Amino acid sequence: MANISTRFFGLNLKSPVIAASSSMTGNAEQVIKLAEAGAGAVVLKSIFEEEIYHELQEELSLRDDLHSDPEYLDYFDYVIKQEKISKYLKLIAEVKAKTTVPIVASVNCISSGEWTLFARKLEEAGADALELNMFVSPSDFNKSSSANEQFYIETVSKVLQVVSIPVSIKISHYFSNLALMAKKLSSSGIAGITVFNRFYTPDIDVNNQKIITADVLSSPDDYYLPLRWIGILSGNVACEMAATTGIHTVETALKFLLAGASAVQIASVLYKEGPEAITRMNNGISNWMDQKGYTSLTDFRGTLSQSASSTEAWQRVQFMKYFGEKAY
Ligand SMILES: Cc1cc2nc3c(=O)[nH]c(=O)nc-3n(C[C@H](O)[C@H](O)[C@H](O)COP(=O)(O)O)c2cc1C
Image 1: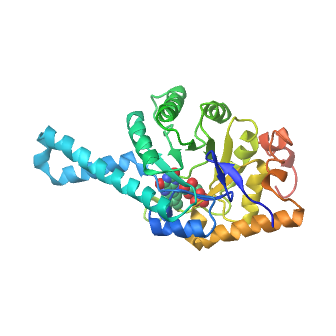
Image 2: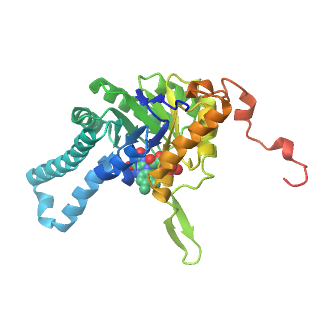
Image 3: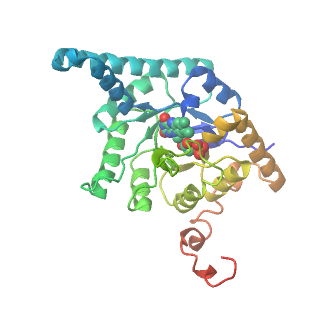
């Protein structure tokens, strides 16, 4: 049987199929099931700085008397943060005691100051690696792209200074020069980059003329954008790459490996099928490798990436050659 072990998050993983951060990875019981199903690693649900502050604001809205008491506010802020953080640290310790699968903590912070504190505590609790879930929306009409990009670089550098576990980053595609940004991040000392995170997205209900939430889960066709960028970036940046978004089938996972990904991170298919989706993918990858005569992922990983095959195929964006042809 083919060996499907790989390296990502700066760790040796027994499978390239990783359970991505989501509410499925927010409790110990579920994490164990994902590990038993054969996940190469489990990324825990992110701890959100925004969430912590939101909780504080909610409590304050119910307690008018507290607004004018700075001492209490300080204390309250501290207690809530401590509770959230303690719960997360407990989860890390619990899953580390129950499984040998690599456990990756995930932090989403909006200010660079808080990162450091969280990161160090997560390492102390036993996390094998850390994933930074970072997203600065490029929707501020008064902020330059370089200011946004600087925030990523500075935050990564601050975290790297205080932890010794490997640090990876999961990013969106919202950069004015994604290739250069990925290259800069990859040279910053991080172990890996995952492309591209999927976010809450607004949609419109035309019948009720209201703004609603788009589907939370991805569909199997959502993988084209990350596939292109794995193809372009892998082999051209200084760290390992992983892919996320729209990876529901064995075939799609294989496409990413051929394009150069070291691993794939899956979430939506776990909601749809349960942890068995991981077993199905592991078996499917292994069977395909047996059929092709490959014994390890390195036999074929990245053979279709831009750096190993065709620049034109990955860079082409216009449908020029189809203009004038009959169907499309
Ligand atoms: C319900 C839900 C919750 C998620 N929560 C997080 C999170 O806390 N942190 C994070 O980095 N990504 C989070 N994600 C994104 C997933 O980790 C994953 O990268 C994304 O959904 C794309 O993969 P998929 O197409 O397999 O769902 C969440 C996704 C879903 C569907």
